[in-house]
Amino acid sequence: MYTTGGIAAASAAAIGLATLMTLTLIGWVAAPRATFGESVGDVFRVAVQAWLVGHHVGFAVPGGSVGMLPLGLVVLPGLLLYRAGRRLAQHCWLPRLRNTFSAALALAGPYAAISGTLALIGRTEVVRPGVLQALVAGFVLAFLAGGLGVLRQLLRDKRLGWSRMLELMPARSRSLLVGTASATATLLLAGTVLFFTSLLLNIGEAVEVTRGLSPGWVGGVLLVLTQLLYLPNAVIFGMSYAVGPGFAVGTGTMVAPTGVALGPLPQLPMLAALPESGPAPLVSLLALAAPFIAGGVGGAWTLRSAPAVVSEAAPLWGFVCGLTTGVLCAVLALLAGGPLGGERLVDVGPSPWQVGLVTALQVGVTAAVTAWVANWLHFRRSAQEQAERDAPDRAAPVPARQSTESGAGAGADSRGRRRWPIRLSWPSLPLRLRWGRAAAREEADAEELYGITYEAWRSEESSVEATPDVGERDASRKV
Image 1 (tube, rainbow, N blue to C red):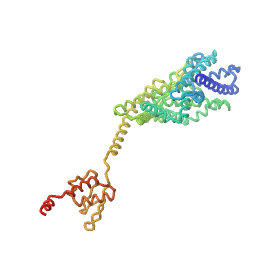
Image 2: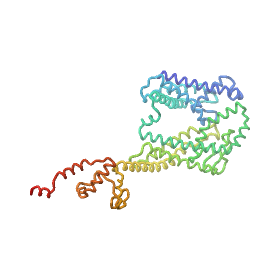
Image 3: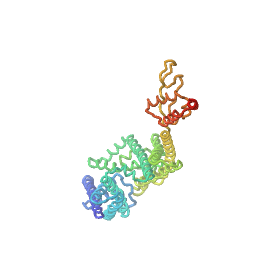
Image 4: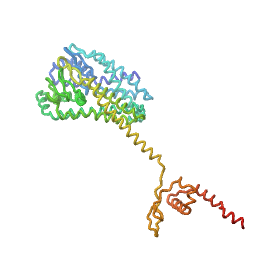
């Protein structure tokens, strides 16, 4: 398995490197030669550096470092590693789902070694990728994406779906996973809507910036591709704005609901979505409701999949959902931002600890209240359903015979009084003897309509009829 994992890791790295090498050659032909180097060897080093950037490996430059990297580029190696994990599961014997961990390790170890080697190869006097960061990033990405591919193939071989995989998880872990994912997805959706709305409102400025760059056909395609790769970063920036802390676009700048302060910006069309310096746009303040909506969604889903037996525990699990959502949003903010060189571009992006703390508080409190309400409604509805199931069955009222003399309608006796449904435990024997013929007629009606027989009552009646009363015994003695 480890040999197959090494081969799969090497093939995934080779395919990704070849793809980036092709894109780099296209850019080398279209752009000035000084941009990518003068020789093919320089072009190869640029491709290696781009491959490391795709794994979110930063690098140092004279006077600073570059850490704000496009998250969209991570999709390429992620898909290749996912495919490598599936091939590994196809060619190796993995009888149980727990073998996914070993298979992911078999793939991640060689891939991390390849990442560290390429970080050494891609070093130049100007660009120096971090070797340790390359090792860690390569291992984590290969373990997650490759392990997901292995798990998907095992589930497919065993004819199981993702829903069945969730059912195998502990109830509380599954509920927190679903609640955290739903709350984070709500926040990211709010960031997406905020970014695209702002970009559409300032589309004229974006067109002017594009015309001023005059990139040409090939350069225009590369410019669009670059902005698409940075689109996940922009969505996370919008999420940070909706949560409250906002983000920075350089030292001493801030884009937040409390106000906007900007400095000189790079010539990039997508930056036209940034508001002008001054008070924040009034429409953008509507995005501040996103954390509370996310808390409501997360709290409801947390208690939907695993209700808390103790009502006091429901708000606790809702708040835990908010904490996990805050941690996940802090990690996303850390990946989306970073320095872009030296001087004033050292600080770009949201603050991870501020985003995580504010998200945990806002989402956590809202999720706690929503979880308590959802848990209370769940057990109240369950109690009502249980009471309905435990309630004794009642027969429908039996319509009385039409009486031409009294004119009584259906459901009433000869005197016009309404007759109540007949129950199996009622009436008792003495009461039946007191009623006499009226009770026997009601029994016959019920037996004719519902097919109900009263064997116990009949046996008792037969025993009573078989026993002569006192008057009959005296008469027989006289005779």
